[in-house]
Image 1 (cartoon, one colour):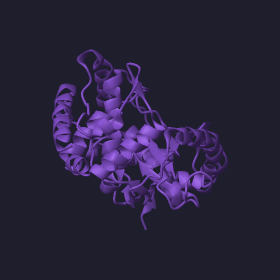
Image 2 (image 1 turned 60 degrees about the vertical axis):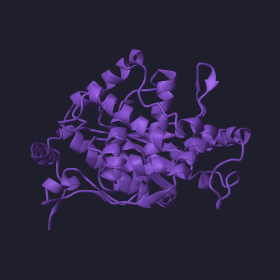
Image 3 (image 1 turned 180 degrees about the horizontal axis):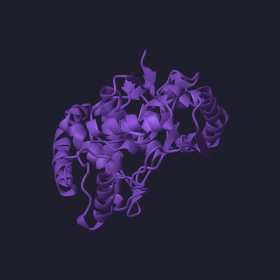
Length: 336
C-alpha cells in the first residue's frame, strides 16, 4: 500500500518534494503550499457547510480547470448569501437585491454575520481537522479571512508566504458553478505516495473571466492598485483567452450583464469622482490596459511573481502581456 504524504516525517516530505521539484520545475516551497491548498479544499467541502460554498478566483482556474499555469496560493470562497442571510435573500431567488439601498443594507448584514460565521464555524472545523490528522498550523482570524500558517519545509523569496489565506465572501450565490476534481501538483510525478484530493463546487471559468476583466477595468479607470499581487489578473485573462474561454464569455451577454449588475449593486467604485459604469464596460467599453504612467506598479508585481517561481518558465514578458490584453479588449468590445 502506498504511503500517505502527510504521514511522512519532515525529512521524507522534503526529500519527496525535491524529487517532484526536479521533475516539474516548480520550487519545493510552492509544491508544499499546494499540498496545503488541496488539503484545505478537501476539509472545507467535506464540511457540513461545504454544500453552500463555491470555490472561485485564480486558484480555481489552475487547480480545478487547468486553464492557467500559475501557482495560485490562496483560496477565494463564496458562502451563499441565501444561506447566511435567508431573512434577506430569497432561498429560491438569484441572491441579488432589487435596488442600491437594499444592497447597502444587505452588505451591512453580511459584514456583521460573516466574520462570526468564520470564527464560530469554519475556524473550529479546521482546527479539528488539523488535530484529527496530526498536522500543525496556526490559525489567524481576521474578520472574514482565515490564515492557515504552517511550518515550512523550504523557503522561497517571501512573495508566497508559508500560509494559505482563506478569503470568504457572501454577497453572491457563486453561480454558475459545478463540481470539479482537484489534485496536488506533485502527485503526478510521485505515484508511490498518496496526496490529498478534493472535489469542490467551482465557479465556472466564464464567470471568473468577467470577474477578473471588470476588476482590471476598475484598475485602468482608477490608475491605482488596491493591495498586492494584482498583476495576476492580467496573466489569468491572457491565459483564459488562449484557452478559448474569453471568446465564450464574451458571447454570453446574459452572463456579462449579470456580473455587471452584481458589481454595480455590491462593489460600487468611482474614478475621477464618478461611479464606474460596469454595464457600459461589458457592453463594448472594457479597458484592460492602464495608462503607461501607472503600469510601473503592475510591472514590478509581475516581476516578483516571476522571481518566486509562480509562473511557468516561458511566461510572457510584461510588455507582451499588455499587448495580449490590449488585443483581447478590442475583440471583447467588438463582440459586444
